[in-house]
Image 1 (cartoon, rainbow, N blue to C red):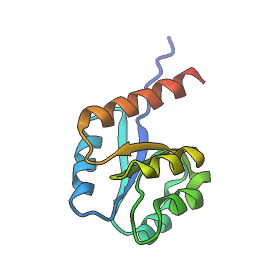
Image 2 (cartoon, one colour):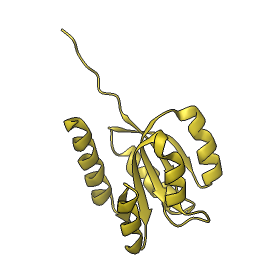
Image 3 (cartoon, one colour):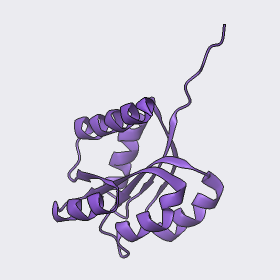
Image 4 (cartoon, rainbow, N blue to C red):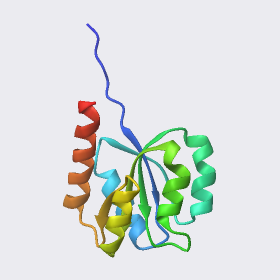
Length: 127
């Protein structure tokens, strides 16, 4: 009998808000299917850490930092399967769709967060 143990999906958080980042860390910790590889408030530290991570399944990325989150997403696109942009303004949603990213509006609640994760995981399972 061949039992397959499902590996958790790896994820990284980049959010320069010292208030939002712990909230997202808490959300990730509540979903057994996710494994947090790193959590950063500094995008330069985060991008440097990607050299050690290899391919990441989910990148949760604040869009409004001193450098646009979309620019960071473009730089890391070959290292990440799914980029989820976190932002307070719906106008950023248009840019995320144009850049093949998903968008979650802040303030974020756990239900929206977990629903998006489940949706992306189910899409991945169908492939």
